[in-house]
Length: 259
Image (tube, rainbow, N blue to C red; front, side, top):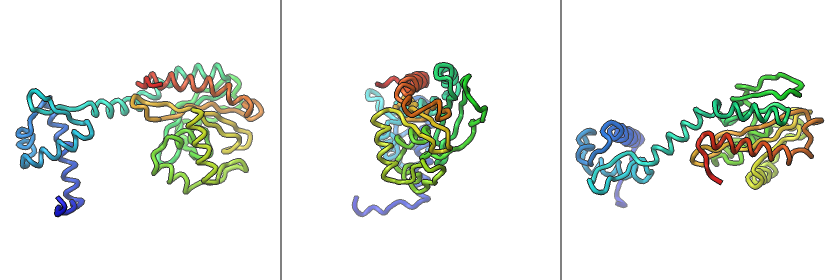
């Protein structure tokens, strides 16, 4: 074992391609044994067994014990569910955002993380909105927006590190200190919601809450924004309570049934 040479990039790519081919075989046949899979791939049985083992560790493949064959595992359902949640997100968010905009009388958005920024995919105006600025499709900085902070709070480590390298200042209130931002993200995880107070634009305040998919992963954030004179910091806890309830409803609509 210790004498095995590390795989070259070309061999690694070939292994990935063969592993994906196994998933295709099982999707087509329903069930298949190691011998059958090896024949389909034109590889030795030991190679097929090793690839199946890797897929089994990820729960993408499982063994049918009584027949010694393999079939697609529950991990496939988890991945499909996460993809479906993202595809369903705009449709399932719309009615909830419309209700929130009516209840809060401010602009409500849903944003996802996209290449290191927050991108708004849904926007509904409240009747008191003083502007009709369209944020749909707009990419905004993670550290200076409520949705961005929420997405960062549950982001992968590499996404968090990348964001920490670009803490640009937009107003005097923008957080540009790494330690201060990390402390705020910790508070967001504890409270279940995040906020900004004139950190992207002077006069603009916002609050956001996380939206989760069926696996519990945070895939988006729903936010409410408005002028600072109307959406004051002292109102944040009451507004956040309604916003968190809306976020929980959207989460349930895309498959999350956790606590």
